[in-house]
Image (cartoon, rainbow, N blue to C red; front, side, top):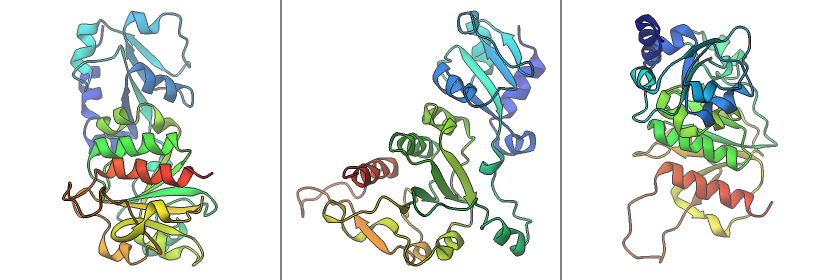
Length: 267
């Protein structure tokens, strides 16, 4: 049985301010929870007897067995999936404190850890839909991209909808927040900065390197003008057949999948 106070605590983590205050987040479903448990212990597990059977957990993990009806009271899902867990946030994913000085920001590489320019990474500029962010994290995981660098106005990676949409990939992809424009400006001139833009070159006709930064923009506005100026490899995903009236644009997660697939196709 789960107490009212425990239900209230878990439900409070739906709000970003409470997640940041506690340094915790909620994951649901056996796939997401199992993938996270493989990397770190949970602070709290709320699960049915069926899911708990035969499992063992770290000493610091509080385990509460509940019925399916009780799980519905605490779950953020319309159809709960046997288990809900509370984990500690990765401090590397925390958004940069707006009160930090410019010197502090520079010391922290504009809010980010040091970027490996010999690998392929993603940069998200104002991607605000939680479902899109979660799907992009899952796409990155599929294509072997382990780092995503986000602008401060990108959706919170610990939003329950984001966590759920990753389908466990949040355990393997590091997501960071900071000053994206400053990060791109700090890169050496020979580092490819790719971006999908309407004035770009047909992606299917380009020689793409398996390193650098792929910038994906906001759902409605695309890549911000200041950041678009820093893109040195402008790409276009063309519609077919050329010249025919089609949809105005692609969903950003779908565009990310097409772009990542094209980068990996010849490697």
